Image 1 (tube, rainbow, N blue to C red):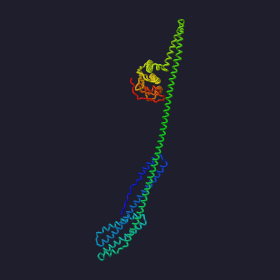
Image 2: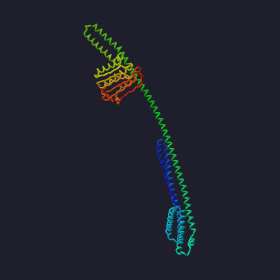
Image 3: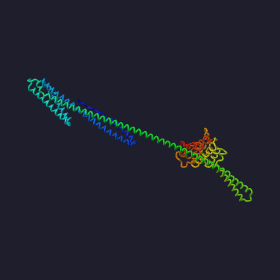
Image 4: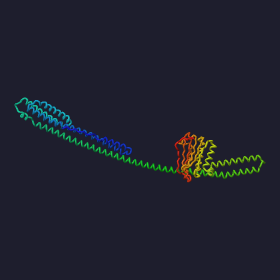
Length: 490
């Protein structure tokens, strides 16, 4: 009986790919476990491959054993067919059965050739095969001799007498040796089956171990990943905490700088007021007294001393110049018009003086606004600083100054048609703009600068009127706005 077996390819390749992916991802985090996992996986791979090859070899041997069993059984049947065919030919005398008898003899020869090649490396089985072949040849020779005898003495003796003379012990010996060979092959098949089962069990154990190692590597990878994520989250939390602390510290430092700036600005204005007051009171009194004394001396001299009178006139002129200089200095330090005439009149005077000094055309549209004294002084200083920058850098021909109250806010703008500048570039000396910024923020307002090269500049201040009546403490919120650059049309 022929037998054939087929074994599907094992699934260790896909498992190895999955394990390799997990190990590669784990390599950077578990330098000790990964080499062990790789070594175990390699060992399991070798065991699985060896078990697979041995299983294939066992199946091939079992297939050969099945072919050998089939050849032995076929040999028995062929010998029986040869004997039966010869008996039939002798009994009925049909010569037509000669071809079938020759075919049976060829099959017997082919079976012996196959078995000789199969048992060539097994001395015991090969000896039994030689004995079987000798008995078979003897049996076939006896059958051929009986046939020859029948041909030479046809009709003188009965076929039963001829056939009864054939040695029946040959048949029993042939069957006994064939059964012994079949039993030997049966034992070999059983042994091969047991070996195959062992190899498959070993491969199964190897795959299970490899799967367990892969799961372990995956578990370690996930654990390390979770630990790494947790560590990264902790680091992010620490960084966020540090960032928050830095922001708080920066806010405190900024508030302190604003307070310091406001304090310096207040102290500066107070010092200017004190100095203006001293100049007005002390220096003004001295100059006025000196001018009165010169006038008394001039009236008493009369026309007696022309040269002395000339000197007294010159002295009076010098005293008038000193008084005028004193007045200008006082106005620069603390504009008296701001206290006596208000913000609108003071800005009109400032615009007129600037136009006279620079030659530029100053256009103003000023409306009264409700502001505290400190806020009015701040707006005056902003306009003063702005027109000073126009005189120094802008080379403008026209300047527009506007002041109005819109939606509860005092809005001031100073615009020129000068050379302008790039607001995105940090200027070398921007202390004037920074001073404006801090002044405006100290009063709770906002300042915006819009400019572009060749398109002039625009400075805008927004100051809540309600905030102006109750000034915001130093360090109050504000922003340094740099708006989108837009053309300034004259």
